[in-house]
Length: 110
Image 1 (cartoon, helix red, strand yellow):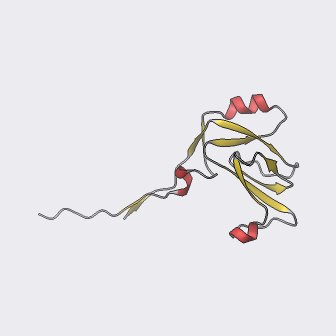
Image 2 (cartoon, helix red, strand yellow):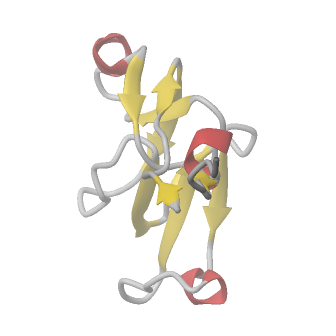
Image 3 (cartoon, rainbow, N blue to C red):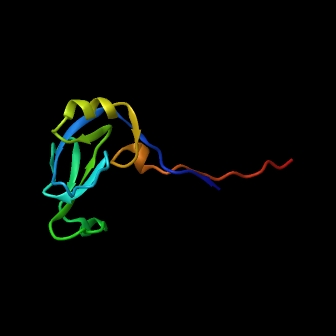
């Protein structure tokens, strides 16, 4: 049996995220309090325990980027958009992140 790590996604579209200074730093998912973003670009998980995710204190929630979106804060949006556009990123909800390749190989007989 042969398997590999999940893939990565090329981030091509920035979306604005709002959160406090304690918010995690990942480009494709965020953990923090009072997180806000455009609902068409990400999934918001208000009750992490419902999904088996760790709850990092009262009021903590997650947002997870869809497709090829990545999160950028409104301060210096253009600079960070340029910096991370077309970079390969882990995390988020995309086919590359959700599918784990597995192959079963058998020797040829003969």
